[in-house]
Image: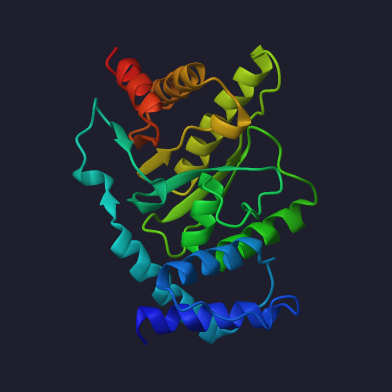
Length: 258
């Protein structure tokens, strides 16, 4: 099958899953098809699927990820021993684990075509990721606590694993408790990666953006926590600070040059 044929198959399959969308027509324009497919991935609740669907989905997403461009962190230049700074789409990074800024449901973002990291990671990993998270949450029996971390395979992403953590939401003044919880996110992710024997981990800017943690203070906590962890444990795991915005790039450049 070509990529176009795979895309149409996946759209038709997902439309037929729902009575509400069963009669919807597949658009002819490739970009409109991609937008619709992503939206269908986003709104889909975790449920059983055929082996054929998974085979075609995996082939489609793996090729899409290659076309999007994959960056192997080992080709980057470290800013110091074992510490890297990279600006780009974290879902395109090849490393041991990438960190997902999740919500307390831990099921990914359900908003169609939303630009958040949670949506992006779940979209390009495939529907297996949401199913995995659903199993974890069902066993846990309650929403994920802020500051903790869960690890899953990354499926069709170039990374090996995804580590999901729920950062603090800042509503009103920033408090010491907010800072402690954010530091806990970073440490919990590092510990989860170490337990898996991983040699590299990429952190996004946890809790900034819609969670409203001030960018500069969030970056300070991230760098401080990682450095402290490495000093206390003797960890040799490579750490990549991943940023998307120019603002965060400038902040991390200043912090990591000290």
